[in-house]
Image (cartoon, rainbow, N blue to C red; front, side, top):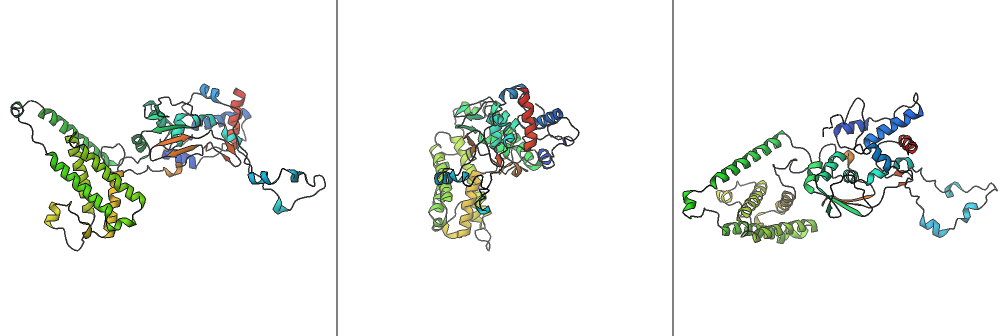
Length: 416
């Protein structure tokens, strides 16, 4: 569905989106004037502007059924004060004109913005929760993720964007979809590299199809020449030994626990590849080549001996690195580069820019409400409880003030 007129600049309406035009509209948003308008017009304007932000994909009749006049709120109470006194001092000197000392007067609580909880029922929707958890750049994109089957609730696939979350429900989104939604878009050079990679892959697929046709060599029973598995196994074992050497070197004592865990994860990846060489020879060959190229590129970036140029033997066999020839700084740099290259590699086939980086203008929307517990590493979140209002804070994120939400609440209060 096309949504071309979502971010107008002349007559703006705020949206639940990370779009840069929406950010510009948020920065210049003002409360509409009410001097020459009737009360009905004020309520209708407040309803129109607030509904454009809260649940624009929800039909008006559906929202009217969801609307509740009961607004959830809490009042914080000091447990120490409750345990120390039963309230008798509040009646002390009543009627005698006795005033307590200004330092002993209890500080008044801030006003509770009850009206900011007008659209609290919409925060239970699955698509809204996905947007609040920063797994999508807009509620419409979150709705698309749900409909396409990329979202699970309590371990089961959920395809209904309007699913009402209950306290304790856990939802998760496919990590690739989250990386695409929150990652920076590709520039012209990266898009060109992606097109070339796809063209090369299509050409190789066509060539493999032509080569799979029967030939005299294949009809005679001669097997095609392939790389022996012993060579692939030796390559992986050499990579594994280098990772083990880096982990057990003298400078490993200064590494943090996180760095050691990353190196051990790299070792487990190599061991898993070694165990699959006899099951998937073609896949293991590709993975071996990618790991070897990755390590070769990292070692070339490290200037192990800047005074002397690399010899022909080093260029012929770049994998022969001894810990004695590496300084502690270069060894630490190699460890960090291995971890970063494994966790955030360069892949031109991805629909987003790699290495991954956050999309522009994202920091202005980077917040998580109190009623959600989010784990961004596994793209999962837990809906802890329903949002409530407390003194000085309404837990429903809204760009509108208490007065405008009050007018919208009054509008729907009469429509019930």
